[in-house]
Image 1 (cartoon, rainbow, N blue to C red):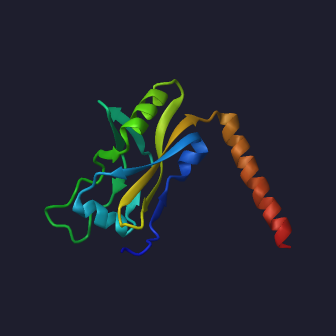
Image 2: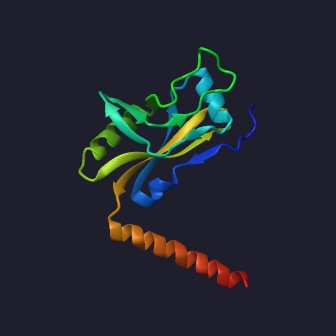
Length: 151
C-alpha cells in the first residue's frame, strides 16, 4: 500500500479563462523518468490543452522536467501524452468538444493512493471578458468578507 502523496499541481489560469461544464479524471501514459519527476513535483500545466487524434485523447504542452538521475533514458519534457478514459467518456467528450466555444483543458495533476499519476480534465466553455471581470470581483468580495469576520 502506498502512502498518500501531497503532489497536487493545478492549472490556475484555466478556472479564470474557462467555465467548467463537466470534469473527468484520466490516467496518463508515462515513461519511468516522467513519473519519478512528477513524484518530485516537477511538472507544470501552464498553457496545456487536450486534443483528439483519431479516437484517442492527448494532452499537449504539459511540461514534466527532466528527472535528475535519468541518464540517456530521460524523456522529452514537452511531448504529447496519451490520456486514458473509458470509451464511453471519450465518445461523449469528442462530441461535446466539437461544439463551438467548447474545449478540453487539464485542471489538476495528482498522484492517487495507488501511486498512479492522474489528470483531472474539464470540458470547458471560454469566458468572455466581462465574465472574467465578474470572477475577479466575486473573488475580491469573498476576500473582503473573510477579513470582516476575522476582526
